[in-house]
Length: 379
Image (cartoon, rainbow, N blue to C red):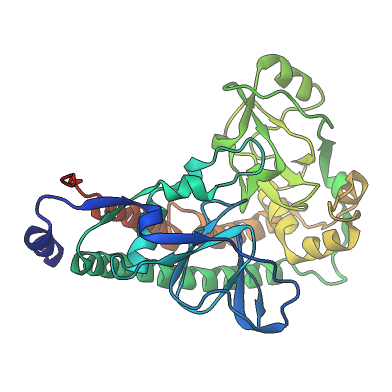
C-alpha cells in the first residue's frame, strides 16, 4: 500500500466533502498596470507574464484564472504579482486547502469548457464560484501535490533539454543553408508554382473537406485533423484554381505571416484565405527547410506591410530568393536537416515522444489522484 493509500484509508476512507469554489477561495479582478513604474514584480495577463512592475496586487500563493482569451492558461504563482483585468486572481483559504492542490484540481477540470460566450472566450466569477472543489485532509493534499510535482518537474527537465536541442538544430540548419557568392539564387516563383488562396470566407460545415487556414500551420506541420470543414460545393469553389497535394508547402500571409508547413498524406484539402500553396519544382524537403530558415524569415520581416495586421504580399512571396543547387546536393542537405527536425519535433520519436508520453501519464494520474467519492453532509 502506497503512502497516499494509507493516508486515505486512515483519514477519509468514506470519501471527502465538496464545497463550491467561493467557499474555499475568493476570486478577485485584476487592474490596469500601465501607470506602474518598471520593477521586478511580474504582471500577468491571460497569456502569461506581460511585463514587470514595482508593485504587487497580492503577495500570497494564488491561482490565476483567465477571464478572457486563452482560458486554459491557468497559472500557479508563489510570489508577489500583479494581474490585469483579463485574468482573475484568487485569495485561497489555506486553512482548508493547499494552494498547489487547488491549482492542480482547477487545471484538471478543464475550465475552458465553462465558456458560454459566443465571441471571445470568457469566464465569469459567478460561473467559477459554482465549481465544486474536494477537500480531503491536508496530509492527503500534501501527498498528492508531492506526486504531481514530481511528474511536472521531470517533464520540465525533459522540455528544457529539448529546447536546447531545438536551438542547436536551428543553428546547424541555418549554417547548412548559408551559401556564399558561388551559389546563384532565383525567385521562388521560378522554382515552384505559387498559388494564392481565394479571398473570401466560406460557410463551414459539421463535417466534410478540410480547409487549411493560417491557424492550422503549426511548427512546420499542417494540422489537418483539427481543421474546420466545408461541404462539396464550397470545396469545388475553393479548389477551382488548385487543390493542395501531398508534399506541397503552405505559407501563411496575414497575422501570423511566414509560417510554413508541408501538406500531409491526405486528399481533399483546400486553402483558406490568407494562405498560399507552393508546389515545388525542386526537392520539396530542401525547399521547405530553406523557407523555414533564418535567411528567408529575415527576408520576410523586411517585406511585410501594414499596421496592426501585418500582411505578406503575394508579390513578395514569389520574389523570395532561393539558392540554385544540383539535385543531389538538395536531397543531401534536405535529408540531413530533416533527420535533425524529426529528432527535435516529431512526437513519435526521441525526446518529443518521451515528453508526450510523460504528459499523458501525468494527466492520467492527475485525474485519478484528484477523483474522490463525495460525502454527503448531514443536515
